[in-house]
Image (tube, rainbow, N blue to C red; front, side, top):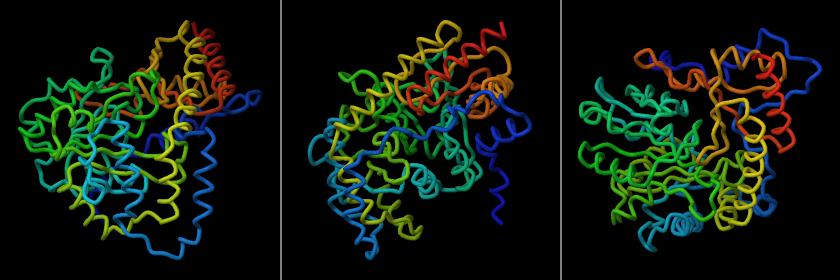
Length: 399
């Protein structure tokens, strides 16, 4: 067996099941889950129709590179969304469809990392656990950058030593962040590109929450935006990951893309050809319909705005909680042990949330998620409001 498997830690939800498995929730309360970040809004009907209208394509072997029409639709979306000049993203060289970002982030790490005792994969802390597991299984060590309130919940990149940058092979970014919702400013992205050039590492920007934001007049920038501002037409050392799961409420479609540096994507395509993970043609055709439409994405953001406004109005008087810059999570501070808070909340109010310490790692005796919990506002509005009211009542009883 691969010895690196012994380095993998249980997923946060396995820890959560263990935490809650020995207790009994209040039988007078119906369960409300704010734990898993699975979108619950209705999937677009026209995407389902595009999928069902092309089921005859199940008889066709898909290619790993995907059909040109999908790559062209993705390229056009990037041009509209991130102001990428027309022609900069070659659909044949700079874009690769993938079966959701989770699979792609893992496989990308296996492609890029040149395994060795000094190889590092640098990521935010707290973080999406795929970054860590992918690093271990690629023969690298994860290095965690704390995301603290004092720095706007973004890593303090200025505090990273030259030795870490020299050993870094991949820098994972997540903007808006999971679980913090923090955005990385475009000037910071440009600075990181300069560091990637200086120390020869790859920036892998996980932007799966990029379409969940609050100000319609100021969509959040991404790594492609920074490349455009720098005139970096070759996107050297820069790769972005996007998905239809959150943007379009299509987590079960397993559809996303990777875009950026053509040389890196050429190697990634080779890896994926052996990996055997081509997207079915009918899924690709349904994905084209999703990437070409923005009306459903705007409606989706409106639903999240309504939920955030309602929930924050209930929780702010009793919790240290702020509206995030993007995404669909709240990251409030709780008094004392975050795991005990989640367990007791489950017992008394039958509401499930995730301990922040389960999403982070201890570094130098500090866990940046400790004393916080993650609330995923994915349930319908009425359930989110009821859950917020129960959390409020729970906190008031403990005072």
